[in-house]
Length: 261
Image (cartoon, rainbow, N blue to C red):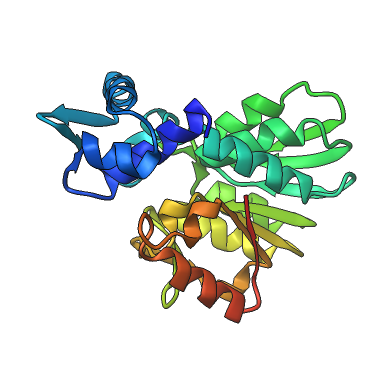
């Protein structure tokens, strides 16, 4: 396991527990306690965990209110793999609607090499990654930039989406649950995703495994609204992601293709 992937998994293990010890992390990760301590120190410097005697505890939940800048540091190696996998599913020549979110920034970087594409961006961050890239015709949805997130929301964004049609919607998501379906923490972001779903021939949903089993505040759509779901292979590990296997089973039962990377 590379350093970046080990840091991702360490952070997941800490976030998934009230408190985790250095010895437990050493056993789970198959590395020395000295290595674990170095990794925890690195994560603490980023503000992602807090060191306590003999172990570490989680800081505030990043996905529910840390803002884009805070969440951007969460699992970068995992999101890079997800971004590459999603971009590989997009056919050159497509009209793509690209959602807001920290994972879709990585998708944008890989889409830059998949041109020719017409990409409509739902956030300022993804638009910045694709501006002036050869082979990419970039459109930016109007609307209000949501503070802390820079996702584009509101009536203007919705009206713009209703006037367009897309071959593919790459949808990031705050939560996916066997009963609730796809959901988001923000009502405004949920409304934009609903419009994107309605205007797209195909939807590829993408999220890291920590989103499986999560019921966020606002329901976006039932599970079968997406055609494909891309997540990381840790979703199958019930020890680190208790809601993962059940959610994957529900997705497959709903006819959603699941791709684990």
